[in-house]
Image (cartoon, rainbow, N blue to C red; front, side, top):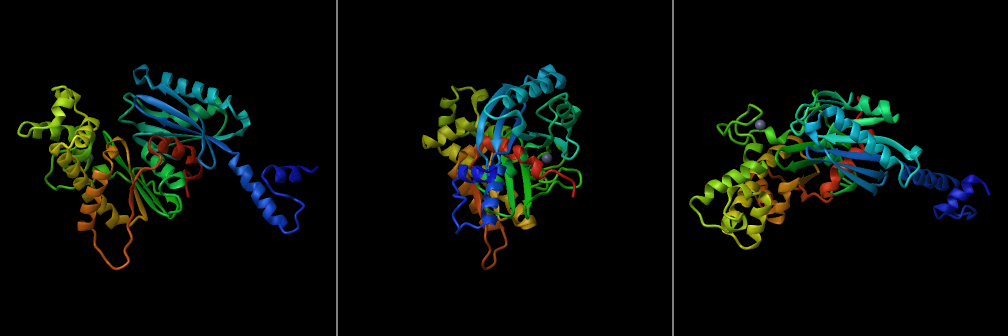
Length: 354
Ligand SMILES: [Zn+2]
């Protein structure tokens, strides 16, 4: 039997059936070959590094997780990334099947050269040539990009944004980030710093932000500021939150606030609605500027769920110019923690100079 015939049978095509045109057979074989292409996606965080062996259609075949141990310094961390990639390549698939590696990390990154200029999650990382260091050891192409861009690409390729042409991804956590995809392309900006929705100002005379600007969105909805606002409010209002936090302010987190809402706590509900209000202002600005087909909301704070989303939507509808037929879609992340791994695995298809 010829190779083509065997492959056709493998993917469920009867090669002898007259009704199936030759071209169609060859297209489907090509597709099935593409699906067998494997990439490795890496989510390089300040606490953990998560690895996934990913097929071209977004299935994670195997995962590995290692602690970052950032205090050991970049050389040690990069060494352990390389070791883990080697371990991952040895399993389930043949070594030669892995065609590329994509790594997403927080911070300012040269997406073409794969250099991490600076990362807030990785203290001590300055001008780390991550692409070069790993390629030298592994011998296959490595792509390095911003973790929020990875999140946006993950949702665009395999999650809530499948089928759309343009998407804005916002991640809500300690920091607030954004990733922009327009007409199927990732928008990096001149300095590879586009999408920083967290540092757009929503109050001209608001509190000073770490970035130097005043009244930044992140200064209102970053996890630590949500907690600070809650603690301030607790001075004058009774709440389940204190009981859940065992009467210690140190124990208050967005998760605790969410838990209090489920117990019907009014203060917690107000805090989440207020958070949605601020985010809604930020996202109304995004819509006015780039008019994306879909906005996907992710990150730990998006765990506030429907209450947060409803508040975001309400504020947006009050603040976006309306006209007949205007479409707007805003949803919570579908892929959650996997979005960054899946998106990073696709960097190869999105990170190259025009
Ligand atoms: Zn800022």
